[in-house]
Amino acid sequence: QVQLVESGGGVVQPGRSLRLSCEVSGFSFSSYAMHWVRQAPGKGLEWVAVISYDGNNKDYVGSVKGRFTVSRDNLKNTVHLQMNTLKNEDTAVYYCAKGGRYSGSYYPFDHWGQGILVAVSS
Amino acid sequence: DIQMTQSPSSLSASVGDGVTITCRASQGISTYLAWYQQKPGKVPKLLIYDASTLQSGIPSRFSGNGSGTDFTLTIRSLQPEDVATYYCQNYNSALTWTFGQGTKVGVK
Image (tube, rainbow over the protein chains, first blue to last red):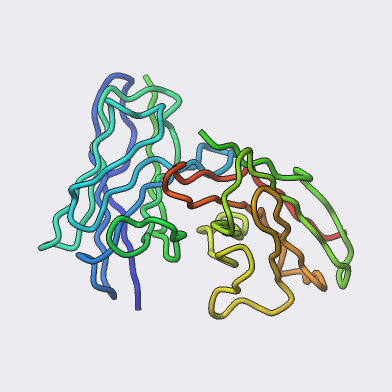
């Protein structure tokens, strides 16, 4: 069955960096777009980033543009989120989610990882 | 960016009652609208996509309707296991993917 497993979270000081990973199995990873979604404590869901099936197209929510970079390794069935210059407001549970084929256009998120906590604090 | 506005922000109903949640998009999104259920402490789960198509394995008491800017999620007969927060989401990629702020559903 489809599985998505995040790793790399933890506590980090403001201004520092962290890299999240999401290893997937159970579907043809290299054919699907992948997303990152976050949820601050007690708050709602916020879409963060998308990467197309081949890694050539990426998009981000405005608040992370220039600080976060999404990438993927189709040989290792893994998607990454490099988070630089972290701010207190980046504190959240981060989920990776499976999108649609190729660019992910016009398709919802049908499978989610269990989520991983990133806490930005001095 | 497109905004998704849900109402109400929370509600409480009795077991067996019908419940309706509304989601409004700030621009037309055709039927590129999904509903997710997130139970306390759990991962979000896709309930409905394309505004009205039930995801596999989801009970038929859940239904979705709407197109353009106005959408609804209805739970025909509320059950104790339906206690959760429900989110709408647009996935028209030209406008990015945006979630509503959520509607918390409780049982009286």
